[in-house]
Length: 367
Image 1: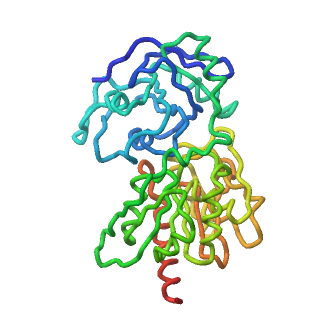
Image 2: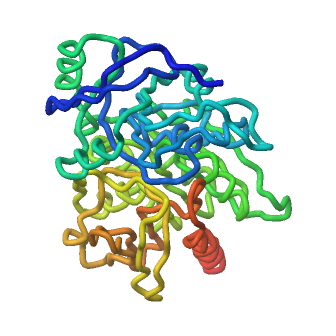
Image 3: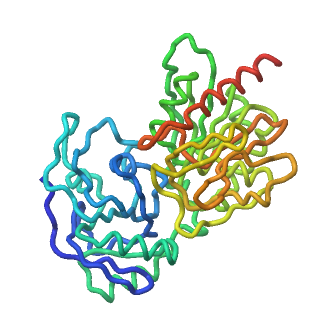
């Protein structure tokens, strides 16, 4: 059963104050950029997504923890978020797959949290003013306010180096007869992405700082650029690597990988007001005109107006017109901002993995 650690405050950098009960791992002060996520389920996958490094996650759905947690649904080796904010943490969980409760997981993973927060008011604050630094814990109001105002947020910070795998590893193909070789560059890759790629071939996962020459030497049929946290402008080493791969091998990017591909071809990236975090964002495929409901988690985006003449936008977010996909003509490279592997979320965009496989097969055929 989840238990509270006593009363606490969440103080935002603009001075807004929220009262609640502390949960999870004890922490006098926890700081980070506060964002909100609109998923109705999948809280374990969200909390264990490395893309949340440097951030405090606010869940807009009022009841969190209802079905507990289990060892299978982790999206990484641990957790990288700075904290969790909820309206009501379930006192008891009920699900046949559950192995423990969410409060216990937060404590074991070292993630502080606060419950009893008016998350509707907090979400409106973030929606109207953008993602804000915040601090919560058992410390005094003045100490929390000072900590919130000194929190740098995610602008101008290279968070990729804090989440990428330190050493490479391999994920075997689901079908042993599948001979495709995919090199996945880990900028903070979710577990389910690796499993999705393994449906289409053997996957070699490499650290974010791996060079283009080293990747080419591995004999990859295709290169995957993963999701990850933070500001793409702060990862010039990744941009240089992608530039060295363009035209040499098929490339598929997701989320941060999409933004890095955009920067590699000369496009600009911008920080969104409060980002896209949820499992219900409508995206239009401009080629098929099909509307896809998508899973999203990002604070930065590619500026569609800055795309060079050899690239075009392929998908658009219908909520705000943000670029959700691009293709580099004649370079066998494409990417999307949303998450076709979902987990949590809908699988409307899962066809993109098949598109990547076809691109790899076509490239092999002309060698």
